[in-house]
Image (tube, rainbow, N blue to C red):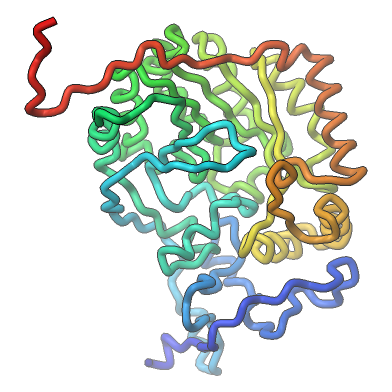
Length: 392
């Protein structure tokens, strides 16, 4: 390895959890301090994560290390690269008891929005990549998703139920403008009369209002948009390449006016960072015509915990101790608790207060009085090549 490309390799150790985050003396304490060193700001401009530590399944952890040749200054910035995902199936199944759907589609793996808190980041470790900067810069697309979907819907044993899209990575992230995979999927679902629920942070969803409006008339589509903050600085820092808060609210308005059932998601709620905005976000969404709302408490599974810590120390160091103290108060003394039924809302007095504030605000604004329901009554199994027409 040449001096200009020098790196430092360690046998892969998991970064230890801080025993007392409220009393941490250093920014990124661990057994291996170099694992917490942030990538130079110029190299990660426009990105959410501060670092790019190796995935948890890798035999070695490689980090940038200055060997005295000042080679770190010569490393190129992180640029978005796109590879093809050759999966032969597109519908993913789950049996989680606290999720309201049993199947979903993710047109993309990785997400350029770069939301630092994204609970999907650890999935990039399955690809041998980092849940840090790799997650938001090394993307995978499924160009065959529409045709694969049509094939799966045509299977004789397929039973229709709502398909959720956007539950892992955003289907309307920036590369969708060129790829249009999501639009292709919607075209297949419309032809088949199949219900779909979409979650996104992008105003790009309004591009497909024509399809969604037609589907909504048959109770086949609904859209949820996540609005995490109305503070433009916080939103840009926390979700660097997602649509701005005003654009998301405008998207909610346009969708509502087109007759498409819309939901505003206050997600995630982060104590001492954006929890004070719950009522304002709901009020703004209600004025945009939204009729339903939901919220999710910040989740910090696996690598997300350390990525969020690094981000918090880099951008809001004065709130670091307070934020993590409150997080632990709502997670049974831990940074995260994945227990079914509690992972979305948390436990304890602070979690209870957030829940009551949300409910009171929704009641005042007339939100959640009625829940939109999708139907499978219009489902028509797509015809497969070679199928004979029925005589009856």
